[in-house]
Image (cartoon, rainbow, N blue to C red; front, side):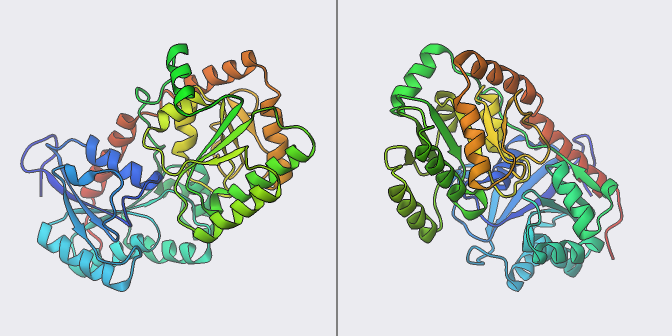
Length: 383
């Protein structure tokens, strides 16, 4: 076994995730790979789907294709086991759902491996609850990014709260920062922003609740409560073609064609967040949202739902605006309160938001993850 404190060869760590499409768990894995101490740890990545939207192939990290067609299957466990043997893996860290279960199966098949599992987006259905219960005897550490998810696992899957490591997401507070006046003007010109602007930095999927936002905007338009030239930008890819078509029809029916714009994936979110007046995330459920933290780091206040911010990082009227729920009327009321803010009040929210998240650094997140790996290496493997 590798020694600690940099003595001896680095310890191989297998990081298993569905894909490297843009998302919160994927971003965390990228940050871990980039930030860990390479004298102590040797990261090896395993993917069900080799699609890489982050360019990790440019890194020296070894990457294995699990050939599981964008989903985990029983063969995923077999392939993980083969990788563990071939790469002499000592710690496997899996990121969510079926992969957590199959990583445990693979570790048990090969013996002597420690398993760290991450749950970063909650356990929304019974299948996920069952998988976490089944995985528990073989899991050496369970990592979540939110107190809300910890409480969910305790309540629904029977995990003791003190057996769960809560490691908040880390963000690059140097990259995501408030823009000065000249920078902000240039960014608004770049994104063609002429009036009050909100940005929804999220994949266009059902759980992110874009339909609720569209219906809320329809209520505001019908009540004459949308400011002139208001724009709401949906910044994220839309993997569900049927949902996108439904949204397009509702946008047309509600007279919102000039209000809502679809941008697709954005490669420089910090520029868009810095140019916008506010951000919106009213998901049905989240872990700790990078989108919320990054907007706040840019000094951009956020409108959030309870499910999008279980840890209450956004305090109502202090760092942003909290909606009472996820239905259209609750979202409309929250957006209306945001648009009612004058420039002074909005800028004050932005300053307090920035101060609130300055401690959520990538370096702190990576260091705490490394400490979990070190701890599990000191424990005997599950027989």
